[in-house]
Image (tube, rainbow, N blue to C red; front, top):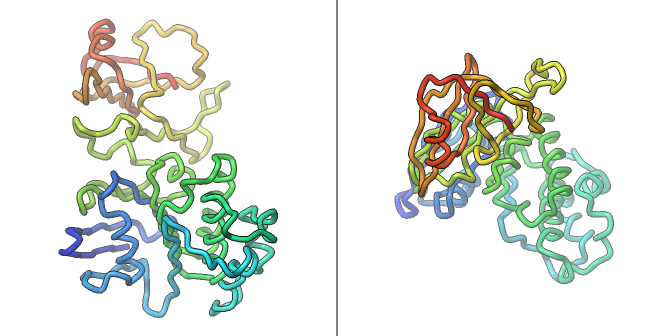
Length: 308
């Protein structure tokens, strides 16, 4: 799957190649990186942009959910949602089905002017899904949802992607993308700095100015009793949540233990160091202070355990 756009005015030059099997693509990056511009290019809203994307084919319907929800104030919630059904090309969803999936039942009789930001986001998303798009573009439109509800909405979106709808979700929250995306695109200053499968996130380039909150690894989930892998299920682990232990390994309340050797130690901002631990198949990152590194005498090729 190729995505290629050049937008000189917006200073965006994006070229990325992803697996054709990717039905749910997550896009992340700092503010101003070009995430919204990419979605607008995919939606055909940037007339001065040159390029194309295999993701969106001729005559396909594209749904776009912007960061700031737009609702019609003279209509109530159910009437706003039902607008999507009025203009659908193929009947795919029922109003009640989408309302239930996005947990909008308690909102139906209310005026849209009384809704919170998160409630408005759900209503706009419901309206867009009811229009039965082939490709659904979502620009940070879940950011105001409470975490439990957001998890349910993301699960529903993942279900839609498995049933044939292509989805591109922009989010600053990487764990959200880990929950549902097949592939990720990282943007910086209008260019792709990394792209690939979610399970390969530990391979993305990390620089001295990379925020420690955005450094993740994905490791195969294991049974805490037997230590055996649980199929192809992966857990996303933030580097700040990983602790390192040198042999002999002691007992710990942290149940997951990743054994390997230190492949690299890199300087980050302030007194932080990025320690990468590698075994035969996987890499996990940990953030440690320079003082802790000296105390543990950490160095490349040292056998070590990473707990999380």
